[in-house]
Length: 137
Image 1 (spheres, rainbow, N blue to C red):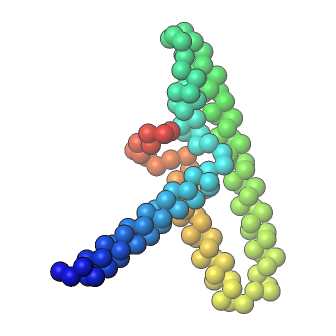
Image 2 (cartoon, rainbow, N blue to C red; image 1 turned 90 degrees about the horizontal axis):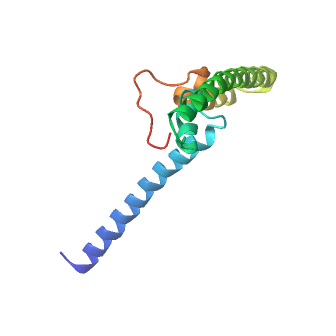
Image 3 (cartoon, rainbow, N blue to C red; image 1 turned 180 degrees about the vertical axis):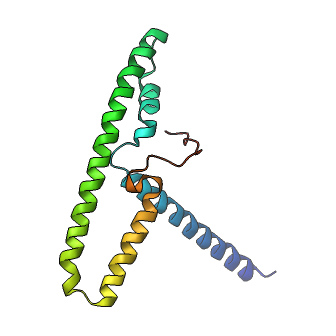
């Protein structure tokens, strides 16, 4: 192979690899930013890991408190999602009469993609059945 061809292949493959990494990192970043409220399913586990209880007695007291707070967090999360959905639905209902069919379909597509992006957290579901927690959770 000629030096120009090798250089072109190396440059092209580096560009493709960089674009792929950029897309993957952007997707990860967006998913992390979408979770404003901690996932109630893993709240206790993460907090216990951060606190690092001294002994088993302290661990039990902490676990009791965190479990109680986890239930409140789940209620807040559900109320927040219901209020957000109601607000978005009312905004769309108000916009619907002035949008063309094409504009309305774009809005619907965006909402569908947003729901897919939220994954297991959309519609108030805490997580997929059988899903193992990520290492940082």
